[in-house]
Amino acid sequence: MSGALQGMITSLKNNKRVRKTRFDKKHSLSNHAYNEFVDHTEMTTHEFAAFQKKLFKEKAQYKRKIRIIFGIIMTIILSYIVYFLYFMKIY
Image (cartoon, rainbow, N blue to C red; front, side, top):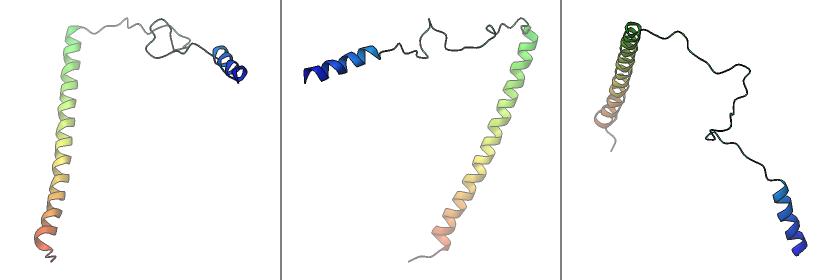
């Protein structure tokens, strides 16, 4: 009995390996052929402000679109509820 147990313990010790996680800082998980991306052309403050304004405008349009779609869907759902509650006289 102890021989089988000792064999299992030895097998576990021999099969142990070092596992890499995404949180290990010392080991790189990516194996790409190129070096890291370095941005040599930075935006000026004027370009960055224009970029921020563009993003803000796009985000506002997206929010408006979502609100309109949500309103249409809720109107349809409420109309079905009203129809079934008041006009379908189920007793």
